[in-house]
Image (tube, rainbow, N blue to C red; front, side):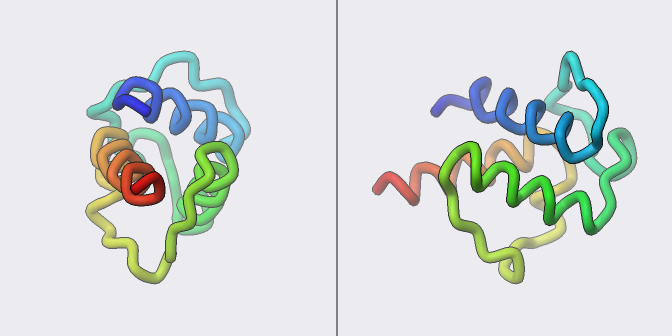
Length: 86
């Protein structure tokens, strides 16, 4: 999965979690400050991504920096997806 596809999975998951349409998603968008994610939304977002991409992520091991921007989350998800495939 490439970076663009990962961002699209995040966009769809965010639309579900936030219960609103997100037609476009800027990679520089901050998840908390710009999109309004809270700690509960973060857990829901990761669960949605796990379901859509087939990842297994230990939420206790996630660093807060992963959720800084869409790009940092996409990088993390992409790396986890590669690890799952290897």
